[in-house]
Length: 197
Image (tube, rainbow, N blue to C red; front, top):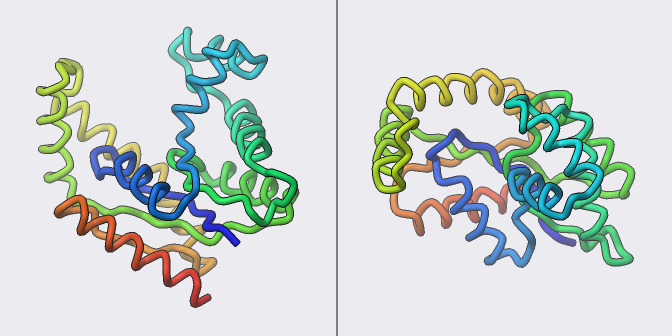
């Protein structure tokens, strides 16, 4: 049996950092949709070419392409026994339709999701973090209004996803503010609640 979770959290909450740390501690792969897109585009797969058609026009990649990429990635992780499939999904699902598609994909493989973990963070603290990161990395486009807009869009898109998992009693929320190690410990403790279900 291996852990299978969806990791939710606003930009700047440390989701990527925590996904990598959890993956290492739990011995599973952190699967980021951004990484999947880049790998498919670089590998010039059919799905990668399709995704690039949209991204090159500045458009969002449609759910059908994203879903197919996630299905392929998860299928590639199954080594004879789907029960050994473990993962931390970062950046997927992004809407309720993708939640349903993930259910269908996992059902196809004969496994279920353990649950969703949402890293919560105060908007002002996250904005401050992202402004500091923009300054260090030279991201001139990451201004305060842009960051606040991204946070608002995230809240609008993710609230329904959180609600779906909450209705299933499959959502735990973890405070993402504090020392990186403390947050990791909180996340690991939260994951234990899935074992009790």
